[in-house]
Length: 224
Ligand SMILES: [Zn+2]
Image (cartoon, rainbow, N blue to C red; front, top):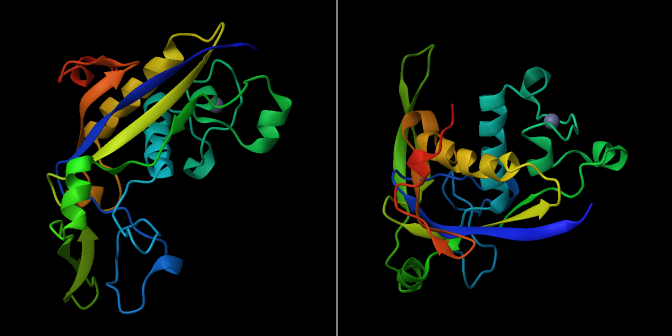
């Protein structure tokens, strides 16, 4: 299996409706709010970012839903079949990888950091995270219990970067899967509380292999 080329998709992720990617419980600061977003662990930074693993996981689950490729109880596809629309692109478990001939996982999704403009504004203290209060209704008492949710506000942009390995004999469909996943993510939501309107995003100023794409290029990706 010979590597033919590495393709690159990069550009901006624009936040359309407040984004909440939760930090895990271990990283919650004492005295912090209940539902903080994930932030750069470096104390001098503490800037919000979008983990590559969150983006990749969301892409994968959208393609699994589209293709009906998930196991019992919604577990990820782990068939290891070269014809699978999920496994070659997004990877398999170590055990399946060992026995199969899929080769390396094709996609690498890097952490998306604040774009230059927003990084500067953040460092100057001009990027307040918003706190949205969501009413969690207690179904028994009927009482509303406001629950704070930290979000990256609409308008903020992050830089994203995806690289994609193409091996000789790989079908074109592998790469197209990534564009389909990006299109589906624009129509879905990233992070938590998507069904309550959080996490709508848009990919903007996208370059594929150094070539600028038209603003509406993702809308033309056929996902049916
Ligand atoms: Zn599979």
